[in-house]
Length: 460
Image (cartoon, rainbow, N blue to C red; front, side, top):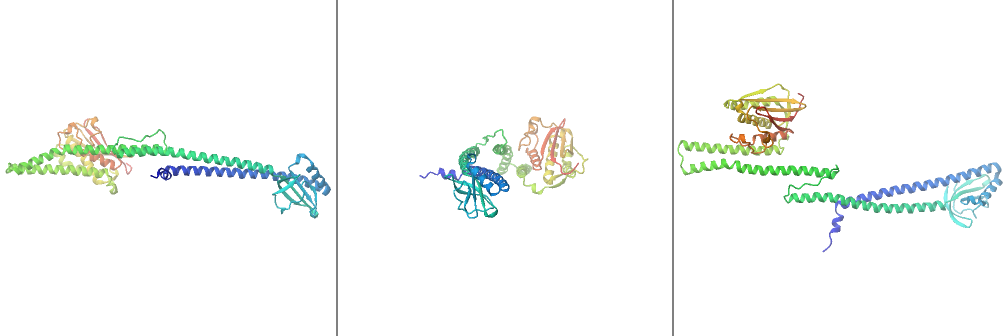
């Protein structure tokens, strides 16, 4: 069977990243080495040219002072001295005859007076390379002055060898660094992959290892862990909702079934039959309201209504909600009081959902706080935050239960004897979240102060 590991390695993202890293590192090293080589060569060349110009300046001074005989004498003296073994001189008459210098013959290569060149020469019985400059003298005489370039060539060759060795070492280090970089990246990616595989297998409690640094992988790990916490919370919520539906809806469905059996058996007649039919209808209506509330909460949590957001005037919204529940409150002996001193308050949102959320808070206050005989509805704004509050003077909600009363179907000990499905505060909390706010429950001393806290849309 063919080995597929190599193609898989070559096609991996980690290998490509490592290869790009190594290539960029090596290319950078080549550019630096090339710059050093060029700069070194230019520096050596400038040094030689400066030395040649200095020699020529001294020869020119002798020529101007003593003429051709003085120039010939100076060149002969310089070529005989050991201290100038690197100097190259050649003085020829108009017919090419050598008058002075340390070259056996005039170079056969073409020379020009517009710049220095490097050419092979034979000097003192030894062949070498010299960098020379041609100068024209009056009467057709020609002067060739230069410096032996062998040392510079050897130095340049040594520098090239050192630089090539540096490039080779740099390439090796780049490949090694790319490999380590690949290992590091793949190690972090593999941890994410293993965690994702475990989560797919159903282990939702597993989390990604996140270090204390703020590098990209740690930030990604923290973000994914937050996402996993939210998923686990949602899954727990789904299980709780399923359990609550099974528990809370079983009783009314059992009552409906029992009454239908009585009607089917013909054991009820006349008024009893009519009462039983009305009871079945009421139970079914309550079940439909419960399912409608569940669907509405799911719709709100999904954010489907954000596209209908518009500016809402808060005070008219509260007035309409109070008017809707005023008759119910009077039947329960409760007075609805609306405190209105902020006519210009506005928020961005869905008016229908906001009205339903406020209505749920008012309905709860009437049902559970009716012993206080008063429910106060108010709106306020402080530091850019708008609060829509409903306060009663009933028994309130114990602080230990406030974190759970917004869960679907949850009902506290004091509310189990009262009618309801346990979805009112859940819907209010979902509407608040949809509007980038939250539901806040506090002690009204006595009673409950329930507030929908929202970001304001206009100055108070």
